[in-house]
Length: 59
Ligand SMILES: [Zn+2]
Image 1: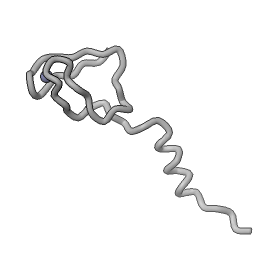
Image 2: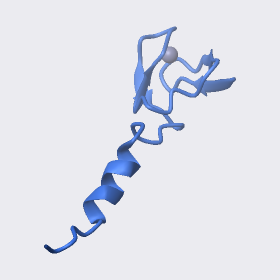
Image 3: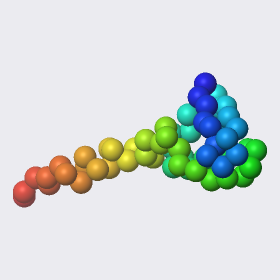
Image 4: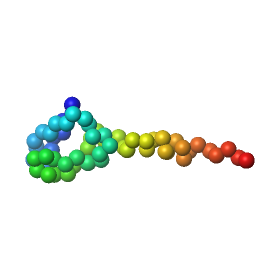
């Protein structure tokens, strides 16, 4: 369970999960859009980055 406090209306919002794949959250009270402090990037993003850094073996 996580909570956000909306910078627009000041009300609290609760969710069963932290929506860490969503960069922004939308306030259910005022429809205000603000940055999600729990945002950690999309799933699998780190895996694709490490793949880019891995050198291809020379043939
Ligand atoms: Zn709000």
